[in-house]
Amino acid sequence: MDSSIDLSAILNRNLDVVNFYEAWEWRREPSAEILDRIHGAGATPSITWEPWNPAAGIEQPRYRLAAIARGEHDPYIETWARVLAADGRPLYMRFAHEMNGDWYPWATTTNSNDPQDYREAFQHVRSVFDSAGATNVQWVWSPNVHSDGDSGGQHDLVRSFPGNKYVDIIGLDGYAVADGGAWSEPAQLFGPAIDTARAIAPDIPIWIYETGADASYGDKAAWMDTLVEYLRAEGVEGLLLFDFAKRFDWRIEQESGTVDALRDALATW
Image 1 (tube, rainbow, N blue to C red):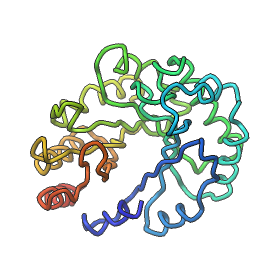
Image 2: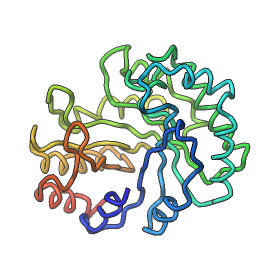
Image 3: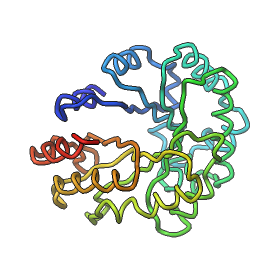
Image 4: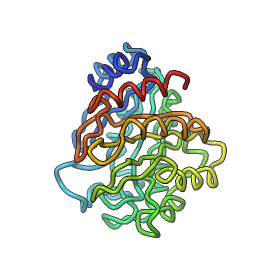
């Protein structure tokens, strides 16, 4: 998280949002220290809230979506709702992201889940927060941009949408480099998912919630410049960069040319 906040100096602009990850298995309450540090940097916290044990693989019966919808985790959810409601400051909650993939136990194709289970789990969790008065929390529905048919693609993206009542922001995830090193330009990568999101929820703002490129596979600086230009033209309202080396080197600081290109591109956005 500290490295993300440091990006404000690298890019010569204040960050609006800083995202961090929290697994339900940890059973921690919201960290006042982390929230204070993000707010203190002039940004709004975003929590990617993950219902799983990160060390236990994909098949995790305890975290099946139907179990969440039935209320089996309500004591934990209610604690978070009360604490964040009492805090009162704005916060984005990205619950169970990339549900249309096949790599998490909350995905619609794994762990005995289906899209209806996902919708009901999302609706239930949001309703617990609303009942606690946590109106300061905005809810992010965050599918992956893959469009490879019924399994993990646009089909399951549409079927997993919880409804306009429950979603405040649509946050799309997608990266320039896929497994095998295949490179995608921004319009190719994000275009189909943006079109799908607009078709099912035309009035909900669209953000890019995770993205990055690796200079080992293509022109990263040019990709970032094209990305910002494309998103601006498409009316996308937010951009969060995954500034870590994980499987690929997504860091902006990977090369100085990328930093310069992104700084210049963001100067007018």
